[in-house]
Amino acid sequence: MSDTARRDEVFVRTVLEPGFEFTSAHLYSAMLEANLAHVLSLDHAGLLSADHRRLLAGVCVAMLDDPERFRPVSYDPTYEDLFFMVEARVQSEVGPEAASNMHLAMSRNDLEAALFRMAGRRLLIAIAEQLDHVRATLLAVAEAESGTVMLAHTHNQQAQPTTVGHYMLAAESALARDLERLDGAWHRTNLSPLGAAALAGTGFVIDRQFEASLLGFEGLVENTYDAISAADWGMEIAATAASAASVLGRLVTDLMFWSSNEVGALSLDPSMVQISSIMPQKRNPVALEHARAILGRAAASLAAVTLTLHNIPFGDVNDGAEHVQRQVHSGATELLSGAALLDRALAKATFNRQLLLERARSSFATSTELADTLVRLEGISFRTAHAVVSSLVDRLSSEGRQWASLTLTELDHAFSARAGRPLRMSAAELAAALDPEEFVARRNTLGGPALEAMRSSLKQHSAALQCSRNRWHSRRQTLDLCSQRLRTMGLDAAESSGSDTRR
Image 1 (cartoon, one colour):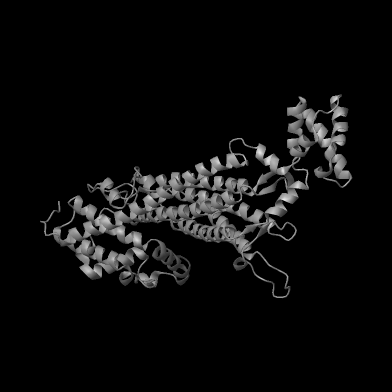
Image 2 (tube, one colour):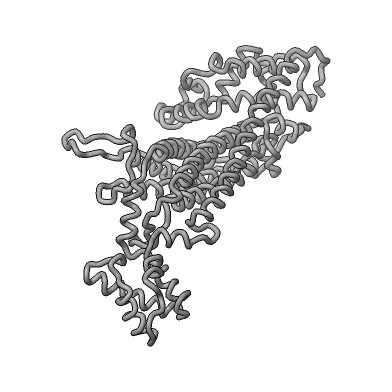
């Protein structure tokens, strides 16, 4: 019975064909590079004849130079997967004898593990570059709006005045930590499992470090069992990407709230909204809604990685390999899409600065500064000052009033009742204590919203962002240079007329 006849139609439709589509889309280029690197590694170890080296290096370079000509257009159930389909194509080009040696001292296990990591590091670069782009937008908005006073909320209640810039810098700080996590993930992902073969290594004398260097790996997954079993590096990528999706999702939630008619603090660019088909007045902030949904899909796909890896054997199993990788790539793709959309919407949005300031002025959000001022000027404890201010909040609230209407006489009465002596504060000092812009100006501690503190923070954060951009750009360049060098070495091997080196 042929392989085709043995394969159940449902198995083909639900497993083999989707598996081929994933590997063809995400692993094909990496497979071509890994095949050439392995041929060069075998030659380096003296395990190939000169003729086989020339034939195999030649076809591998040809496939790299014109991958689409050699790429299978669709799944062929004659073969189990892309690995065997590519191997069959090599055989048709160089003959069965030479082709049979291309994967000497290699298993699909260590090859597949290497391809996943090669695709994973490219994914890390893409995620890092997109998140750094969002960080740049957040820093630009933070600088432009560093003087835009707004009400911050805790527990969904008006809390204290801050600035839009201060808020945006907080969001950027959270993303910066995700970039640090991605950096750590890079070093644990960019390790070569090649040479592990099925799981116990190979009886042929090969140079694992040499092969790893050809593909731009920084080192090895040393233990050969670990090399084909490890899935934690994929879960680390998923976890970090999920963290970024969560940060961006929380940002979207606030932007949606600010863009509501009742709040009116944020307006999206007309290119980012849609008008209702029946209600002419509606300007729906749909770009934010779509970003929220896309980021939600990202989080869902990435969360599935943990469930898929839960309670599977520690070894080479499909659960921890292809299925996990499909979830990682699916979730990362959604993250990239959602982040790009949010980035664009925020970059083109405008803030109603005057409305935000007036809303801060007509609130009780400066209460902390009033209490602090009583401590500084009157020499009382903060808890006593807190009680004085809290009693005034209760009184004014019951009368439908805000801080702007508070008189110095009213404050003196409340203070005297608690402190047992008259108030020394002047009317000008009271007005300054209740001014939201003054509130912000006095918060000049490191990381605070005052302009001087913001300028210092923005300078440091901008420098850190540039370092991150340089780091990931350098990694992309390094991988590209490795690919170019690999091809050059392949050409040399294909054209060399050296003697037979088989041991």
